[in-house]
Length: 146
Image (tube, rainbow, N blue to C red; front, side, top):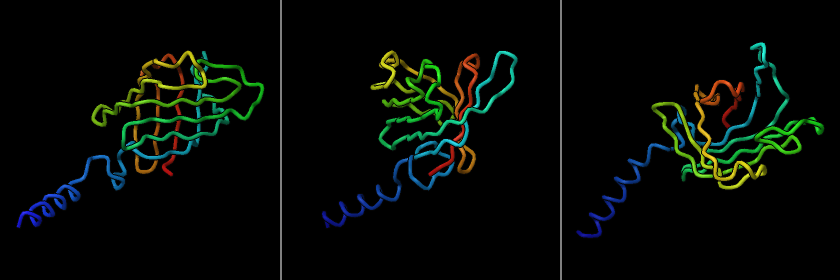
């Protein structure tokens, strides 16, 4: 009887698995492929930059970003070196507020290590849009779910 109760509890826990299950299309958790990067210039006009990249939000609470500008002569930015962006670290996701914050644990751009980066996000079906919480940064990245 005791083994039966243990098995019953284990099955109940498996059925009521965490809110980060794969079948939740509205969740930010998962792997995403970049489809566009837009920068806003001083006049307020948005320009599309031909970036490629990927972002992964793991169920265990880690965010990983890889992105590249195909222009080898691209100027460095606060997030890139030689046209490449790469960092990861623990992430806190607030699905209700549609925000997340990563504390950068490792980065190609060493000045980012230890920084807390807060972002807005919106998930619609299999599309993810990320924008900075500080609109003055002037960028918008769109991804599709892998």
